[in-house]
Picture 1 (spheres, rainbow, N blue to C red):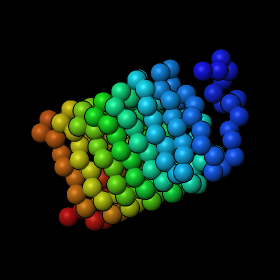
Picture 2: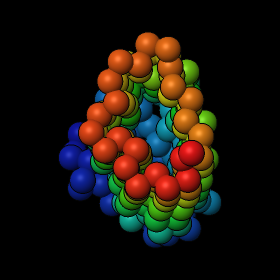
Picture 3: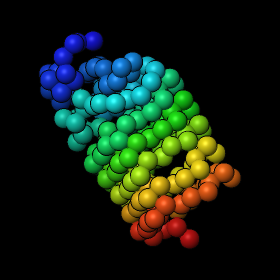
Picture 4: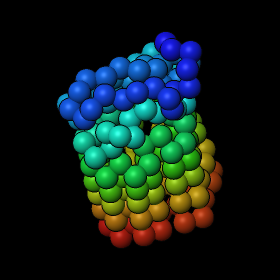
Length: 171
């Protein structure tokens, strides 16, 4: 792990394979359109912005506990996200604007789903909200036009303002 600021790490050319830290004890490995995050703790910063046009899938492996806000915001080619059960928090705007995102494998232990976390994911078709989530925050799924199915937890007490506004496919 270099002692330098993550923003100053030189990124190899597109098409390359790359592994770099993305938190105190997390490492992200990018190869052929797939970003795999391993380790323990929260993912707090990213180096993969230069890969956003070719990133198709993200796999968050067991041990990772949280995803900071805006990590993947606006990744227009992202189609699938797999979130391990160890993840308990997804930050504000984490996946907002990922217009091609269709499939999310949800953590069953999630208890904090950030504001606008999936806003603008126009092709997302379903959401399974974990039992630990008591509040769906404002604009969490705003503009998810293809969203047809949402499974709500029994302990849900609050649905924030405009949480599902613009979800035209919800019956």
